[in-house]
Length: 384
Image (cartoon, rainbow, N blue to C red):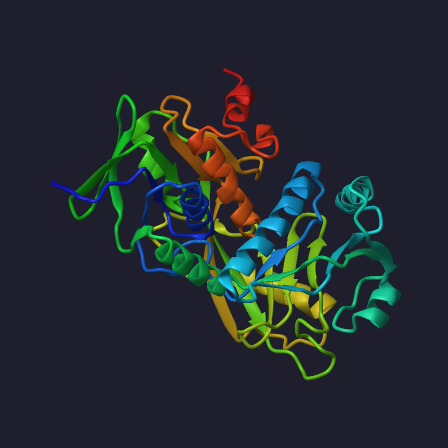
């Protein structure tokens, strides 16, 4: 075993949006930070890659609306520090049956938080946003602040900011052992290097349980392989960020979402939480049933797009039973902080989650209540 000679205050495991954001927040608070990433920077093995992600305040749950408002401010600060455009406002449509409970909850939250929105009928949507064709019994809630985040550019910007600020970033380093000490923690990687630090933040996505399982508190996390499809669009109507909003479609038994054309040719469309369980190191082939489901949705609601996707990608969801995040300290070893279970909707909150994880690691008071994201909710749900 090699005992690394560099001295650090904090280690962050995971180089996705959450890990990079946590490392950035810790560094800005004066911590000497080491980040360990098991793959290359910006890799496609986890959950943070891609040309675009959605940012929105449209949520049925009030606590996510509150968190999203803080996230917008955190993204603006990050964008200013990075000196490059990381997000683009497009507006957003939340679509569903006129009697949808989800849409009713979204509208209630818009009103409660005094967020501007409009309720549009199917004909109104068609006139205002020609890429869409809603069913006659569907409506849409339009919220102008929604938009897209440039995922790959964001990861590169954070990697650069961390390096310029003095953090040590080690790609291709898989952690093999975490050993809590009386007043700190020792981390060992697959190259035999080990470091002892005061604080450890685990933001390892689909690999979280393999790292934390030996520490006695298995987390209720499920890893699934989801997939996204890109459908080519004609020149008119406009399917770019300048003419097409992002959308969330609430169906009876599933949710679809989509983004306008960004870098990859075509409109990005996918089903939410319709993938199959898998081990993070054992990828599955792309699922034909998933593809057909998305194609049927595109044919019925986005009729100008090509009927068959020309490009498809897989990504991992690491989900909790309630699809809410885990932002907490380890219940036995408080020197270990956990960011996990982002359930396919965590990217938009990345910079803000980084701040909250730094709060937890350093014992600072968080700016919002973390009760919805506490580990104790799972113990309370256990009938034993």
